[in-house]
Image 1 (cartoon, rainbow, N blue to C red):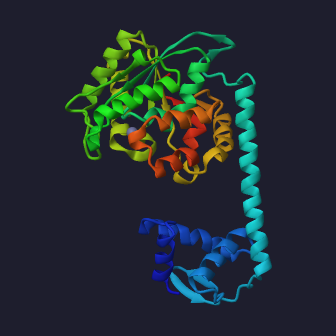
Image 2: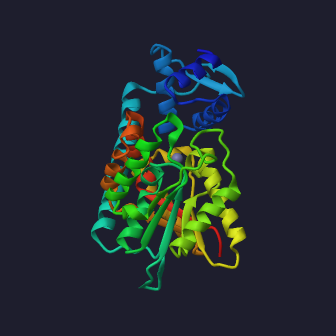
Length: 340
Ligand SMILES: [Zn+2]
């Protein structure tokens, strides 16, 4: 096996997509390889064994140079089996513990203090600003479920019909259906269809135009709190990022009028696809921030989120079903306050 062969192997199993990640992946395993027996090098060994037709050759990647049989201990089949067993059991235990935590959250009163001033709940007029129909169910479901359960008055402003594939009219209806599942009054869902705000990669949206539309909506419904994407926009989609910039622009323009703004924190790919397990990291992260600038909201009803996303029939293909199941955004949202 040579270096190129290893890269092909990793790519074939979709472990890697870009060459630049190859280096970090290799160096990560290289570091674990240098240590004594560990589960990580067992995985690496197993992967290499598969590629090398079970010839059980150890590969050492030393600054990009491949060395065969560098003199590490070879593991027996039993050791590898045990390592995998430990890994899979640990994942299973974590999943069960996470499910119990979510269940506990939905059955008992939430200890979250978001928008809860020392136990006094003041009903807020909240505006959720998204870019496309389905953003609400795919990314913001934990936030929506929390706001609705706490009795806040939630409005949704969707900045496009999601017409990238010519399905704008269908997707509009799907958003109304999903909103009904999420218990957002349909009359409080506004979908913008502006020629300069059309769905698509590479279609830049004007931040001033976005700010004007959002401003109009905030005035119409006496909105005092906005929730939207952060500057990366969860998936890096340019429309999500522009929506964030539009809200920032609005803040700049309306500095005299106090509107509280919170953004959904984007997380790295490993956490993004760790599903329900990520709730522990999100809780830990927000607890470490003592300044009240972060809030961690667990989804009290992930099944409802799944049903809401299923209303987007035109988008409900196999990979999105998997996304909703394995995405941590289905189970937890970390919000960060934008302004003081
Ligand atoms: Zn989107």
